[in-house]
Amino acid sequence: MERRFLTPAETALTIAENGRRILTQPILKTIVLSLLAGFYIAFGAELATLVTSDASQHLGVGVTRLLGGSVFSLGLMLVVICGAELFTGNSLLPKAALEGHIPWSKIARNWVVVILGNLVGSLFFAWLMVQSELWQTGRVAEHAVGIAAAKCQLPFGVALIRGILCNWLVCLAVFMATAARDITGKMFACYMPIMAFVASGFEHSVANMYFIPTGLLLKARLGLEAPGLEWSSFFITNLIPVTLGNIIGGVVFVGFAYWFVHLQGRKR
Image 1 (cartoon, one colour):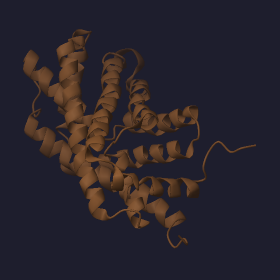
Image 2: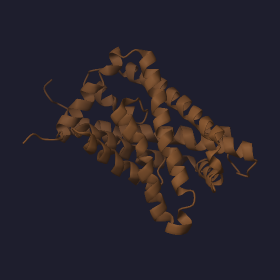
Image 3: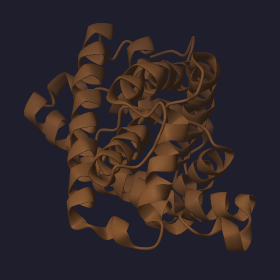
Image 4: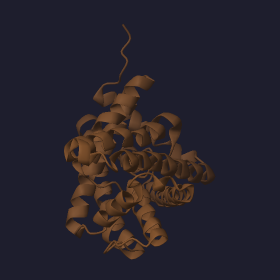
């Protein structure tokens, strides 16, 4: 019977070879795909905000986080199955450089373009959601502002570590989704790690590009009190350490680890 999945070694090789795409992919396509990834992750983040806005008073914190993580996983499913350029998932590109398929300079260029595209897509989606006035449902607005304010109050070291743990799981999800050979397998591969990172409270840079700007826009629109929630704290207090943590988690604990185990020293 035909196998419906790749072995870990085959998956590592496939990811490394897939990295060749950035050598020939036009930059305009990269921009469009990175904008789409920002939209897709924001879809999951918006849904998680709605679902968890009043669930804790009925179900408790743990089950509420489980529900939030479950619906948030929609974002990575859309990225993986529909195709998009997500900065955190592209933390696996160094595997292709280690194999000699692409130069490191191409990775740096890709990361800059993709993270900016993810940011613009997320900001635009946050603006759309505020203009939709769907935040008037229940306590969605207050909950969104509370999420954003909490993220902007994290100490640098805490945000960094949560970023490491987050993208460790995200890149494992991408690794498993690459191993899966059918849509159902890819959906389950995305679901479990993403649910785990959200329920655990880890920090994802692209998700925060939606969560925090949405809170900032609603704070300004409704005049809500949210100490520490400012645009400067979004970039400096949260985005910088979380992004650095995401890079470490993806590159070191998944990309390099599986390259070393399965590909290092292999005859090419």
